[in-house]
Image (tube, rainbow, N blue to C red):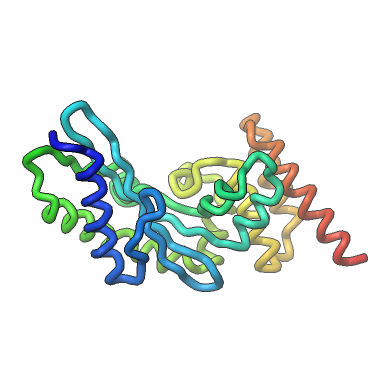
Length: 217
């Protein structure tokens, strides 16, 4: 097929034009389009490209970054660069997985009408991504996901230690009385799985507790 790089660039430009009608910035950040939401948070639509020899596929994901949660959690992770820490998201999912439990791919080759593909992607975004953004702009709804260890929520937050950290951070922010029991529940879950992220969870909790103690002194 003709230059894949140029076709991808054209697709991103077309998506930017469409998404800008709904409050997203026209310019892609990498392959993501951002929309500011309440309290300095942002919603993101991400296009992933899967290359093949003569063509490529695309998938569409939606995510939300809760700024204060990401700052709290990332401050306890000295492995992240400043740029990496600024790009993390709190909750998100590929749109096919959101409804069908499997990825939805859009194929592009030399014969593809890009207008048709963009139109199909935008239908999915409006029907699936926009309600997701509305629902999970509410911190209570996000915390409900993060407190659950049910396999159904793993697609929304696949890294167990991050889900545990988010649960604790949100419980702290929302002044939930059972903070210590939430910490214990999340730690027990990670320990039961021998999760490699347990050390990051413990680092985060230790830092949080130290800051809380300093504030009370």
